Image (cartoon, rainbow, N blue to C red):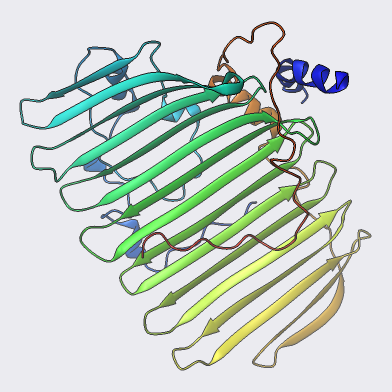
Length: 383
């Protein structure tokens, strides 16, 4: 019991000390070039919005908050703290009003407290046009407790007069892993947009996880639709911090007429030895299938075994002299994410009274068994 109390008492302080230690796959190509022009699938320059114009909304009894009625951009990954510009108030505010054009707005903020030193500072704001055709909402928050847990996040949504709607959520978290005692930072983003003029929309989920010894995991799930065409993409990267790396990508698309096609590959390497393998495939509306599979075995001695075959009779199997190249470390790692998370790290928890220790539930989570299988694709939120 004495050991347990000592560990709990130092956990928050130790987390701060731990912070001092210190070609993903190409994005899925849209099926049609029309995705790059206009509509909700592209960023509309006529509604461009500058971040600095948003800050006045955070001033108590200041001007009415301004709407951000543009959908998020596709394939932009996880935004930085600076891009979100989260700026929470130190006092509770609850305001609302009506503008000269009849549109309405509201703004409120608070500071919630709970057990184990839990604290959540938050702000909500939003508004709508006089006829309700345009609407927007945005929420910011920061959370902390006595275990050293810290969280910074934002969520926004809206719709415009053309019937387009969108939603976006962003979050970054700092905590100490109960099993390794290492500090971890996790970042994530979810984005969705739907067109009001046609059967079109897209959804993306991105995540990044880092620990103080170099373990890194990154990935994304994507889905999109434009009328009769749909496409999906999943990719992931895993670095164990000791030289092992796993990367994979799976992309596929289909039309309502029954045509389907896709491409996937995977690579695993450690200490110069590893493998690559992949498949490209196509299915016709009548059900005829074509595929080509390929693979490489890298032995670490300058020799590479290459092999493959296709359903049309192609085949090859040979050993060649070839250098092995792969990225054993992420191009963006622990030191980078710590440097870019200054607002998260600066969150101040509630002061812990002397003799009071945080409660940690070790049964709440356990390390997941390693798996080479990619995570499943979530159901499309656009249907």
